[in-house]
Image 1 (cartoon, helix red, strand yellow):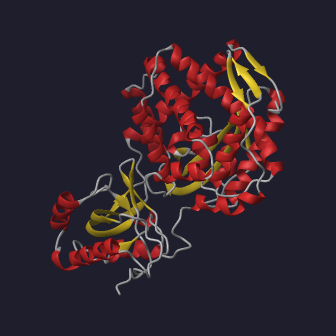
Image 2 (cartoon, helix red, strand yellow; image 1 turned 45 degrees about the vertical axis):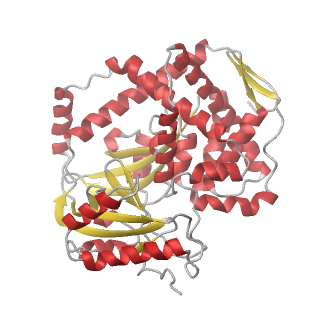
Image 3 (cartoon, helix red, strand yellow; image 1 turned 90 degrees about the vertical axis):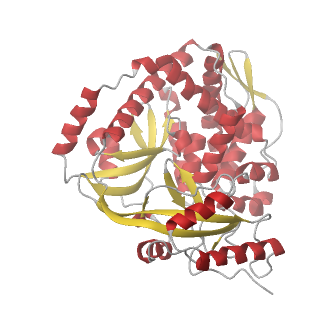
Length: 456
């Protein structure tokens, strides 16, 4: 009987995002097959009962936020982290969750007033991107919510608010964000003066403080988030759920930053952090910042191995549960994948085969990949050493089998700051500034009635 033998070292799940391939490689075993968020059910019996009751927690311009809304959002947090929450932690979450729900309601109301409509396809694409950033197969997040008794509306409402606010900012204040060629050229001159200095690739979760009286609650909330992150919760998922900046749906990605582009308090901490660390809450204007250091590089001088590839994917009709007892369809997929090792001799042939046979939503050409940033090391070594054009052995994952061919491999200087990077950074900075001003105006004009045990 044919089994799906573990491939040497890694599994491959290719997820296309922002023009690059995100590689999530895990050992093939039944314990590692489900995503990390699947840890929650085992501890469900020990968790507090979060869902229930419909008492009014707040009224925002005549629209109600219920205690059940707060409980569902707290439950979503538990699912996002994959970790059980004690009642004490839930109680600490409630005040900040209520404030976040109030802000979301204000944003949706303002978007509706301006007749901005978010289509279901936009929400579906955002959910898919969140899943991709967290190495989850398509549909896994919705399925997880359903299995844990949390309405999909909890996630959908949050994403709708984020998308509506982003679109409102683009349409209403976009004309105020005028980045000229002179602005970019000035920044390029400054960058040229900093060649050889260090810059940092960061992720951020921003917790706002709209009233000084709420500072302690916001700090407690930030500390709770940090403890979950350090216990293994995925940063992009938590950022998407709780960060109150325009980078939330991008997993809190700030990109490459120089110390002079950061708040001084953040800059001091970042320069001392090891890669992969998560900071303590950092008090910054308007709230608290939680940052993670993802990488460092030397401005203007960072050589890297850049590869391009083509990949064919053979999907499973049902997830692979036990590699020792594959289904007939899974065995057939393995046989087809293995045949490519003998029939494919070049990237052009792999490209043609993949285009003729590739399932939907699977990238054939994921763009340029920096080999040094790929994990685990076994797969990175494969990308760096396999002969160009030669297919790899089948790389087996829970949802299918991939075979790839490396097409090009060259050394490039990726430390140079491009005009596009500068323009995008300047746009993001101005949008964020205008966003915070707009939220202050909405809060000032709104009728907000806090009730019940929301904790505010």
